[in-house]
Structure formats: structure tokens, C-alpha cells
Amino acid sequence: MTGMPGSSHTAIVTGANHGIGAAVAAALAERGCAVLCTYLRVDDPAPGLPPAYRENRAQGGSPVADQIRAGGGRALAMEANLSDPVTSAALFDAAEQHLGPVDILVNNASGWVADSFQPAHTDGFGRPIQAMNPGTWLQQFSVDALAAGLLIAEFARRQIARAGTWGRIVGLTSGAEVGFPDEVSYGAAKAAQTSYTMSAAIELADYGVTANMVHPPVTETGWVNDAVRKLVAEDPHMIHIAAPAEVAEVIAYLASDAAALITANVITLR
Image (cartoon, rainbow, N blue to C red; front, side, top):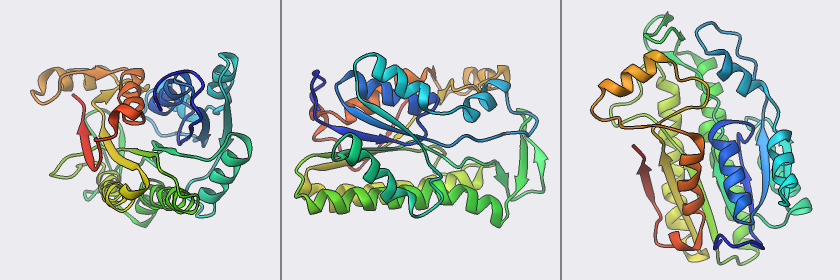
């Protein structure tokens, strides 16, 4: 993808109804890419989550696709439960039928749940934290690890079958080398997705595919409150609170021709 109008590329962007996913869909569309925007409306009744964050997760993906089409682009919104193993093939089938062969995959969606090895409690930001259990593990790993892996596998199968010579895979991660306290399953699932993505970078290199993970800074997707801003201001390892569009620009660059030599990396944004 050169960034010029008329690009023949097609992308699947998961979790594209709000935040970084919506911004990535818009950024790719601006560069001439057709985009399948997947989403799943989620009701977050738990106290402690900002209303704006709950509203974002509960909305559908059609407004993003509508905006792309209104600007002359090509887009399709599709509600999809990524935790269902049959979903991956269905998404690629829909994209191929309506938009064209998929050569860009952005694994943005998350089955986010806050859990801990401690008993259930509330963290310093007022969020409820569950004790880690099979339910929290399944909710997190079914989307961030299993679904991401299956989407990469489906991407690879079709890329190889058509003898593709160009492709881009980008995932989003978070956490640190010391894990992710109070979000232990989230951190572990993202580590699994990172491993899948790094393996894809090596295994699919002969088919012109690059694969990278992006670690965004704290990003304003509706959950940032005064406590989070204070944390960022006081932590010497944090520099910015990013807008979704800023993160999306990096992902769009990784999906371009210019980024052909960037692969098998975890790119940390600060």
C-alpha cells in the first residue's frame, strides 16, 4: 500500500467500532484500502468504568463503515463474535465476496477483563478486579489469543493458496516483561498473541508478509480519568496520552510499502 488513492488492498480490522480500531479503519481507508470493520457490542455494567468507555464498547460498527463510504471509500461493517472458532473463516469469506482478497490483518479486538491472583477487589482507579478463574481466562484468551491465532492462520492459508507476494499483519499488545498485575489474563493473552505474530513474521516472509505488534501508550479511548492522567504524569517511563488517530498512523505505516523491512518487532510507542 503506497498511500495513494486507488489502492487495491483489503483489510480486516477487528474491534473497529471505536477507539484505535475505528481510527485504524479510517486511516487505511484514507490510503485507498477497502476495510471490513468487525465489532461486537459489549455491555459493561460494572461500576468504576467511565460512562464514555462503556458507551464506546456498546455501539455498533456501522457508523465507521458509513463514514468511510461517505468519503468515497469501500467498507463493510460486520458484527462478529471472535470467540467462536468458525468466525475467522466467515470474516475472510465476507471480505473476499464484497471487497476483495484480504492482504492486511489488524488484530485490534480484545476480550478485555480485569482479573488478579488476589481476591476480588477494586484497584486504585476504582475498577472492579475479579479473582482469576476459568471464566476470566476463557473470556480473555478466546479473543486475544485463540481468535488472533486463527485469524493469522486463515490469512496465511489464503495468502499461500493464491501465491500472494504482499501482506501485512499487525497486532496490538500491552503489559510489560514483569506481567500485568490486576490484568493477569489480559497480559498473558497478549503475550500469546505476540508469539503467534512473531512466528508468522518468520514463516510467512517468503510470501511477502510482514508481521508486527504495536504497544500503544495510554490511549484516550474513553477510559482515561484523572487518576490515569496523574499516573502518566508521575511515571518516568510514560510520556504521552495518545489519541487513537496517532496510534492508527503508526499501524497504517506498518501496512505500507515503506515498511517492508519492519517485521518480527514489538514496537513500543511512548
